[in-house]
Image (cartoon, rainbow, N blue to C red; front, side, top):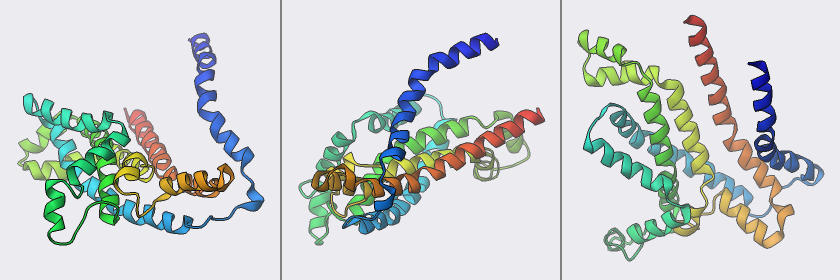
Amino acid sequence: MKTGHATALWLSLPALLLLAVPFVTLIGITQWQHMHLAWGDGNAIATSLGLGAIALLLIFISGLPVAWWLSQAQGRARAIVELLVMIPLLTPPLAMGILLVSAYGPYSVPGELLGKFGWTLVNNPAAFILAQWYGALPYFITTARSAFAGVPQDILDAGRTLGASSWQGFWRLSVPLAAPGLASATALAWVRAMGEFGIVMIFAYFPQGMPVQLYNNLQNDGVDAVYVLLWLLLLFTLPVPLLCFVASRRVHSGNTSIE
């Protein structure tokens, strides 16, 4: 068995090197003595963090009931809902940006209705939030659905036997037991929303968040102008999912030791 593990590790080296080399390179080529924000980076950071937090709240509120329903439902209705979730997940972000412009832009039916009140849903904070919401929601639902599906059915059945309503079973049993997976789903949604580029680029170019600002810095001043903002983007996105990963492993290890 140990020989098999060693062989698997050696065969894994190409993939591991492929994943690690860009980050090792980033550490080596960053000019640490010349680290400073470029023009507009501060506003981009505030935009991504502030509007991203609002988008994450909307993702959690809207995605949680969908994920739970998918984990419990059966039949054709579930298949249809799963399809509705999977299509945006599999659609390229640039294409989704075009679809959002077509659906909510100034020449769409909702856009014309908003225009009558002097409002628009393109290139403004609301559009930015909608772009992040739309881009990250399928990731949250898919991961949260798996978390709910991992809750033992016999525990839920015992709750019903003891008189718990569906609402009580959801909040007092399903949510606490699925909490590690829900934390991972939230962290994944945060990373996806913060890093969203394609949809935002098409649908909400203004205000500019960190991904679009990185692109502009690269186009205007070259690759040397992007490293500070790139490090900050990693700093604001990676710790949350990494902490969730560590916490999930500890919970899993604790459950394993108990068994």
